[in-house]
Length: 179
Length: 197
Image (tube, rainbow over all chains, first blue to last red; front, side, top):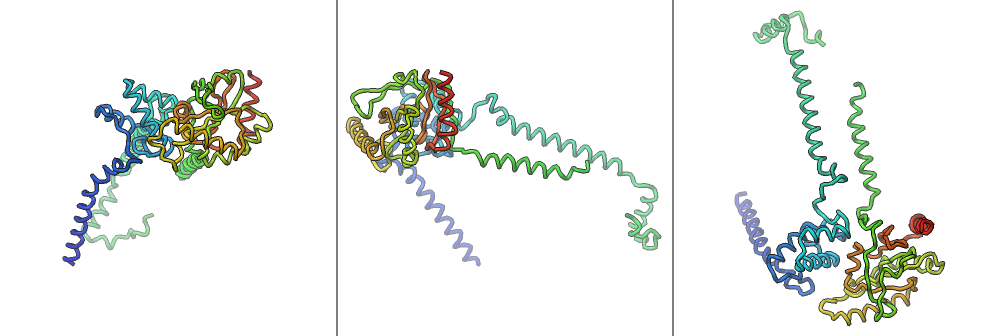
């Protein structure tokens, strides 16, 4: 049993080591394949901006990936557009506007706050407030109900005392008579 | 107060209703922000004569369709016979935007290919495809790098844009045109635009 557990731990450790070792390799993989080699701007700051922006833009072809993650031809084109426009000195806002003008707000992973998205942005807060209000209402009502029924009558008190004392068996009030 | 137990049931049906409606929507159809906006201007080489160009303004005064196609596009083959039939009936002029003919084809590695060579290859491939399948276009233009496609918000082929006499995009059809979408949506819209114009 103990040996079994030991083997399991060892196996887990080996797997973890293997995984850790493979990480840098997979990170470099695209660069190793000339067909997939991502274009990179010479200026590291510019490239960082391109990457940052690319992660915020949705790929229209594989809709659950950003254009930074996707290898769809359109994503590559759009990444190149982003890089080219940033390199030519346009601001990030300009580039975002450029893409939104062509593909709509759908390209933005973070939808803008405006009339049509108010429910989207305010919805969680509304739900939270509604839920909190409902909870407060329920709690208040329950405490009111409890307050109304809290007091025991003198007869009930007497019976409770008898029950606790253990000599209530002779009581004429059988449990069945209560309903 | 007696019907209180119905509340979860009603909530359930309301939710089910929303979800059922959601099933009828197509998440692949992204509404274009270009509807009712002026079509992006372009000037591109013509497929029939790559030395000369065609510009958007040349269609001014006409209601027309811009159909995005490529020889590597499988879904284009589905709608193509319909386009050919439409051309035979002279319903509406259709201009073809040949989109990334060479570099869009996954089977070809166009990286590092000179633009001249790529254009020549695109012309050869596109012409052969039209010869095989019929040419429904008044003319086609070559969007070698897909830049005009991006300007039009193209994210898949085929797509078709309905452009009015003033050069505004009035409708975008995503995916292959079907007889139903042609009869029920596109042709009525063309009629409407022609009457208005």
